[in-house]
Amino acid sequence: MKLMLDCYGGDFAPTEIVKGCVAASKEEQSLSFVMVGKQEEILSLLKQENADLDRFELLDARDVFSNNEAPSLILRGRDDTTLVKGLVSLRKRDDIDAFITAGSTGATLAASMFKVGRIDGVYRPCLMATLPTRNNKLVRVLDIGANMDAKSEYLVQYALMANEFLKASGMENPRIALLNVGQEEEKGNALTHEVYPLLKAEKRINFVGNIEADHVLKGEADAVICDAFAGNVFIKSLEETAYFVSDAFKEAFHKNIFTKIGALLQMKHLKKVKKLFSYANQACSPFLGIKKMVVKMHGKSKADNVKAVIFETKNLVENHLIEHIQNAIQTED
Image 1 (tube, one colour):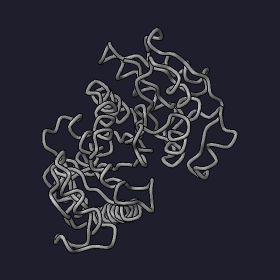
Image 2 (cartoon, rainbow, N blue to C red; image 1 turned 60 degrees about the horizontal axis):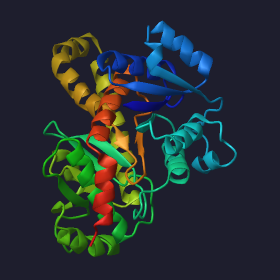
Image 3 (cartoon, helix red, strand yellow; image 1 turned 135 degrees about the vertical axis):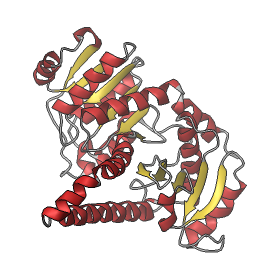
């Protein structure tokens, strides 16, 4: 299997990206890689990590798209960016199974749609977030940023694609819920009123009804479907709350010598909480609805995160996620 990595996407690129790839290559001999970026820098890093250079192909790209740039700019004369050059190669080459990046989410989505293309029948590709839950499992939330003004038929397709993703990840009967302001069927706005009966009637998914935002992290569903406006507000509010609570705990633990001792005594339990959130960050997030596998990993990914995403991507490719999504969309009623 050959995977392509954007070596200059993310906060710790290219060093941590290369380290993660080399670590994965040493654990799994069937993997080979196409490394996109500044050729001489990547080669130097590969040698530092004692990589088997025969399994690493270098694709030179001199331009790097910044997170601070408007995503629409990726389509305007930026053909030598690691994103565009990598995605064009993904489209053209049958030997590359997936493209992985920690770069700009919006730019990756835009470039994927226009340089790789949508699966036939997909109205709009969507973005998916992975979150930890109280029952030590993960929940996926989609769409979280691609389509702010979604239609009911978009959300039905999100549910179908999420269902196929979760099955490809090893889940037998994923629970699919609709994000809403109440659990009752009659709650919500015009969009949720319209999409609820469509999801309820869709026999290929295990639709468990509405779910309120404060129940998402309780693990009551495996995937939560929503339009990107609601999804983005939900995710960003949750992220800032997590940072706020984390900073509050850090301040409390460092207040004096007694609180520091208390923190040391609780370190075992604190590490368990950290591990749960770390696992969520390691989960890969494919852009569902794109013709070939395009995977977004967390912007702060380090080598261990990169390695974990590589193995999860490998699993999705081996389980034919793209083909299953194609079949699900093409057989819609």
